[in-house]
Length: 130
Image (cartoon, rainbow, N blue to C red):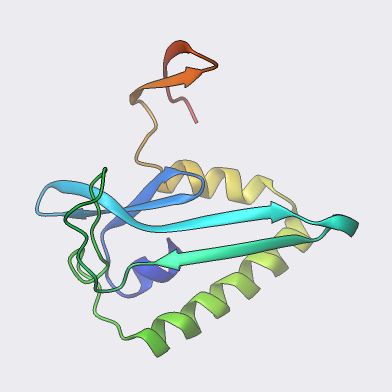
């Protein structure tokens, strides 16, 4: 989110691992993060960012950063992502998770939204509080 907004994209967090963009009043996924715990307390993280591709056959809305207002090429985006990852790692080492919870709430587009999920065949509904 930090890197995308740095280049002018209108983006927000749908879930902690999904970055959605706003384009002409519509919302769609522009990036995602997958993290997997490894042995020894290590974590493997994968980041996918849609900079310029169109996906018209997706089961959910998908945009690219360019459609959401970003003006950036791959090398600049990669450099900013690396800078932000290093910044986040340093901030986490120094301050723990608290600052990230506040920032997530500020950047979340889901707070106040009614959501529905399926938990082992049972439909659950609720409002995202934070």
